[in-house]
Image (cartoon, rainbow, N blue to C red):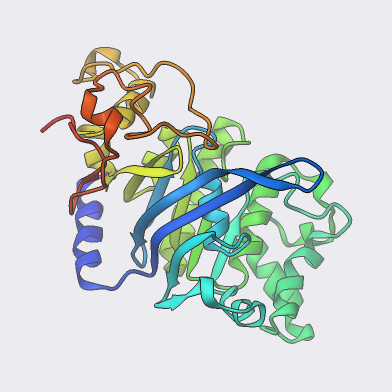
Length: 337
């Protein structure tokens, strides 16, 4: 991504209010035991994260599997009620809304699921799957629905005739295009993309990413793009938030993250990212050893200290706080400073 669009996004973000504000979001799941299902602990899938997304930008949320990325996305669209925290969308706190009140917001807040095979009802034709949200939210008359379905299929690069087919008749890439069409047909403001290309072939991934970028320009969309593939996240994101074991450890522009990472975990992720010429890396390789600790029993202090090659006594005793304005990092001894 060139530097100019990033600078434009930075300038825009200072002039406009955030479209989405997440404040101290927590999603804890109880661990029960015995006949009486007594709660003996909690799985801290998301453990107090905060971030903003501005109109028209794409924020990438990246991290290893099990770090809480998808849980964050599901909590934002209220598929799961958060344990604690606030989610402000257009200044409205979604966590305080009733079911009927949330239904009015859902037209502006949509999600694209990771698995294009399980996210579509196999018993319904594509035309029915796409027309259902329009009829449910009363955004079109029955006589207008077919034209809207045909139009949205063409927008995502599929023939109109596909509306009469069933999901099993399509490839993975085509099904994901249908998933994008279903999210787009309500004309939303924000779309949560929950690893939308991870289940697709590499060549198809590029097509879907280009489609998302084109749709963002055409319809002034805002994306939260969740992924663990750094190539896809780098290509589509204006800013990147790095997540580890339920917490955000670093946030910066895409260019800053890739050129000057400050958190050892971010540096380790980038070290594992393949590039055409290894001799052009320009930074020392950081190897992350071991597995992610259990979110049911996270380490005290800095959660990353059990795997960090630069760990010191302070890291074991005290949890760092995410600090910084343009480039935020949660580390007692940040890199590249």
